[in-house]
Image (cartoon, rainbow, N blue to C red):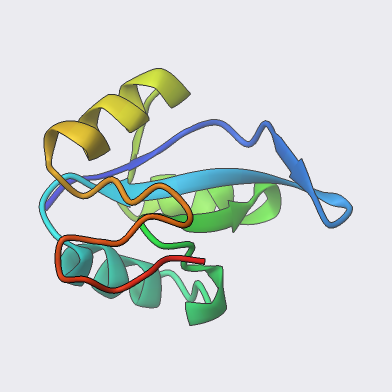
Length: 95
C-alpha cells in the first residue's frame, strides 16, 4: 500500500493544504485517510485535502512525500484522476 502526499502549498479557507492520493484504488485512499483521522468531508473527488498541521501525521503513517506534478502523474497513470465537473468512469459526478 502506497499513498502519496504533496507539500502543503495550496491555500484555502485560511489554511494551507496538501493533497493525499492513492495510485491503487479509492478504497485504499479512504482506508488510509480514516486511519489518520481525516474527515470524509476532506475527500475531493480523487484526493483528500490534508491541512498543513496534519501533514506530518500522514507522512509518519506512511504517505510518501512527492512533488505536485509527480502526485498528479501517479494519479493520472493509475486511471484515478477525476477532474472537477467531469464524470468518473462509473458515471458519478465530482463537484
